[in-house]
Image 1: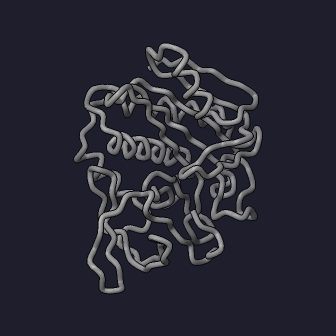
Image 2 (image 1 turned 30 degrees about the vertical axis):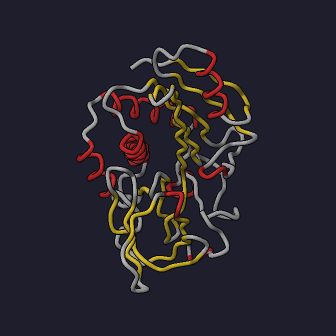
Length: 258
């Protein structure tokens, strides 16, 4: 599938650039926005996403919304596609659990005995009244940068797999895989099933922050609305929560939260 590609050496945020462009121009088809680096990259919940200039991938893909799409299923389809793209890049002897999705849409790689964040996805939607008209899929991915010594629970493709890749080539692969995935009719049941099949921490007892309290429990299910079901070990009833209600904790770096 063809797409428009716009590139700048440096921007504040590829998502902000894409959103501004879409509001000022007619979006007739996919438009890819890339930069060698960002000065104010955006993450989930208004957090910043740090990239190393020229070493990592900063991209946003703007798309007109197609009939049959829903935001929650679209989010899962995007995460599944990006996970699959990374799996294509990993060494052949890598475990089939080496690339996983952390609900709702971070991509983790297993490295040094633990799962570490390699890529983050930020999807921002545009609406005209109650009609969902366009969407911007932002992807930040650690490609060649050093992350193990950073104050975040992260890694890069180079650190985890010993590979050196050009960010532009990875971005092109991710974009083409995603467009191919989205060109097919969305099957919500199959997408939810696939999403759960690659979820990090499914059924594992872990610590989470919920309503300013740290609780132990396990993520046991995800539904078509994108909510996750948690079973708590404190005897309380199970509950379905939105991603904004939960913060994951990583016990081996308890001071860092994501």
